[in-house]
Figure: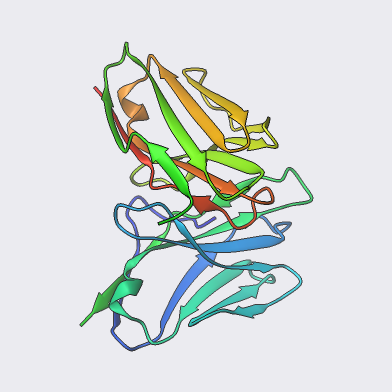
Length: 113
Length: 112
């Protein structure tokens, strides 16, 4: 998961612009990656996933990019809306190994009006 | 609203109390999970059940005791907790282990 400090990184984006949230994962053997969104007072919500045999996957207004060479994952949100304000975190899983899941700490996305 | 419910939503307990958290999923999933979410820390996986069998115990202290009577219900029994156990406890379920997980709203636990 993400190697972050004690505070949550924050990304501030103008409404209507595109957002890019990054994640550095730790295990080069991880083969399944997921992005979750957590709004205040709620549990995390699945956004999109990608397997290691792909480098890009698109959903509705979201795109996940995977760069296995540098162990980097990104989430792109198109035309950011106020409802996108939340904490976003990535998770990695090595399904063929010890099959654990590791979550990153998260990035807070703040939408500017 | 997700198909995973948790009760209670808030719980305050003393260090000598015994309490239980309940989770129920209405999605027909086979795997269920307990997570701990603390400020300044990533989401921590505590326990995993697949087809009612515990498949993961992530070095969790014995003062946390899970129970999975069937594939729809999951409990977390708490006793002699410490103040550092105060956190948001999240339950989740998925059809396949670790794939797309559906989370409940969590129980906000405060240990005095």
